[in-house]
Length: 402
Ligand code: SF4
Image (tube, rainbow, N blue to C red):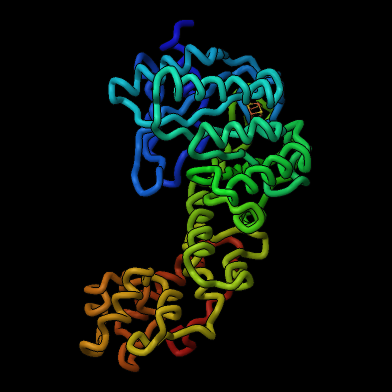
């Protein structure tokens, strides 16, 4: 296999590594290798070459096409070869950064050493000073994690499951304490010391059910994300979506509804950018721990907290405005800053300020009056709730409108 063929194969194999929330992934087999466009680097976006160092694996994770008992086409780069291939793409202006991961080929430390060699060659021989996102493999030793922090900009660890109870059934061979928590703790220490330039991220896998029938609910995944941010200062938790793969024990399993992943990202956004208490955020889940697919989590939380509404837009605090569906940080700030110019009287006034008026209408008062569009908006919400099976929350808005 020549280098370009390896780039295509190992770029495609890296497609399960989530690089950003709003990824637009183009996998181009052939001479260009595999490009992932859309990872956020600080405030800028760059084109990342997303690739594996090796797809040979000693582990047997039930969900993974690269598991050792499967027989896919496999390949591996030497550090020289991958560094040269990347430098070639970079010098032609085709990529501006690298996201490098690997299957477990030679143990976690052996795999990490080869990835580190690749980045070291890039930094020295090829004088590449751009962005590198390096995956730390579960079980990697502390000294290798420290070297990774010196060489790369961002480090991440694929935790995949939100707790040890999910590991065994998925046959990952990973130990929660030694392979997951210990590297996370070292990453956190380095990050707190300011030694990881772009911080650390994590990844959880949505919608995978072990052959024994164990599956992490949305509530468990969202709780895992919250735990990672709080305990380990993980800046962002990415959600990968389980994809049934031929040759695995889960080949016939159903893929999760793609909206699940989107709803989890929205819940994370609420948890990190809005001032909801934990128990309020928990109100977004139904009795089975699911986020409703038909409603975004902010709407679900708002419906579950009837005491918070309606909100009088002309006198509410910034914080109270922020809790209204359809009002975000920018529009809430505009309302607070500009309403002294005159009372906001109808939905058109809200639209001008950037509010999604149809979403906000059921939950606001404008100069003491309910907006006229509120009943229609309520009907839409009620229809969406009825479509959910089983119904996760009891809709109880203003009694006179129902
Ligand atoms: S360690 Fe598990 S998830 Fe990673 S490549 Fe190997 S089998 Fe796949």
